[in-house]
Length: 569
Image 1 (cartoon, one colour):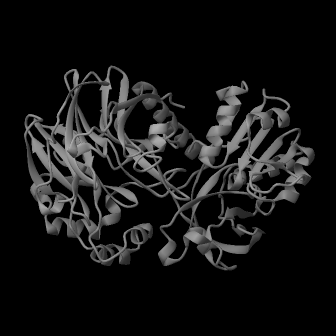
Image 2 (spheres, one colour; image 1 turned 135 degrees about the horizontal axis):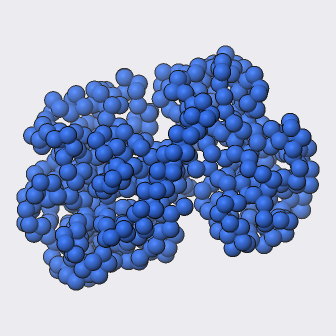
Image 3 (cartoon, one colour; image 1 turned 135 degrees about the vertical axis):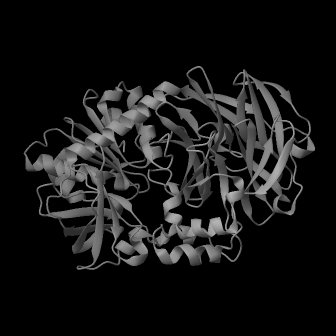
């Protein structure tokens, strides 16, 4: 894991009329030993302009303008200029921002030669009706259906988070942009190439222009471009935001990817966890709660400074060692390669028929399918699965194998969420004979010795295969499972775990108050009572926030990094 230092708030809003509500999401560029901030300044009524300040070094403000450096002038930006980013390409500074007219938010551009005077170049993304976008893209059935459920109505398509790469690549300008839920990429020889015909062809081949898709926990709602890419010897470092929905809103965290230096659409590696997330007061509570929104970064020596909007109220900074981050990314790359080499990962998609389907609990399915010839995996691993129906083929979701590798079938134990009308809800409608598509095998939770398995909800699924495998080899020993659920009816496979583990199966319920089970949450005190030996291995899987808290408690109890095994891909 990377050590991230929260440097604190850099600037807050003032009483000045143009920024009396909030300051956030700065464009950042280093010039010599100075750092220039072009930040979103919000006045009462949610009208935004671009403010300016200057830093000496990465953290110390030495100059701040009392008026906006850029203000709305045209109809397309009449309600505000939001969330700028900036790069320098061949002597010219390119400042992109979101132009908001009160209804539609679209990427726009201003250029400068001196960082003081800017010339607006207008919108650089297409102004296209949502229904027109759908009529071009949807019939091809090559992208996730979330494009059509997240972009609705009769208005124009929102196209935000426009971020240029800081130099030309193969003699072309490259920039990222974001139509929910994914990050797309554009390559052009000249800005004049962005014609109506260009965008028509672009949308006809839209699936070919997707750069990054939500993949990991805590970014599954949607993702978006963050800071301008940073060129390193290992590739382009991409700092982006990942968004995860929770009851009552969304949480925005900072994520990392590494892309090929000559082909920035080719992913080299990606951190499977959040680089950092909201946890301090100024990140948790503000205009929009639980937000870390990265928009600018600088490098001083070997330290990477990431500047971000905190809770849409102020601007903060976090720092970390750049070499350590790149090393961590390369470890993920090598781990992925090793899994592909040793587990037999194939790019071939396998169509399998459903053999049986039924309920394990009120909201958990057991699905048994055919097993493709020569298909291999290890206990604890997972695969991406989609439903072999036209509208669902591209909707891949990760599910753990709960069967054993030696079984002549595949089994999945899957929690369903009918309220979202998504993949899991559709799975619940399947009958024997329907088909699934099994994709890549992945995952790094593997049995590394006797210890304590700690699971939350559906996070128990990778442990099912591991524990069944140990039982089949008469090696259950003193392995222990601590399983956190909301209520008694939510406990997955309770009778089987009781049979396998006997007194070493411990259930804790957060919403049922009963004398038959432990009640509440997994605390340090609970672990002290229920874990006899903290020198053993600890296997963690469950909701990320919950597992983060458990991991901290284990560290406090003297458990080392090397003894904690959790999902890393």
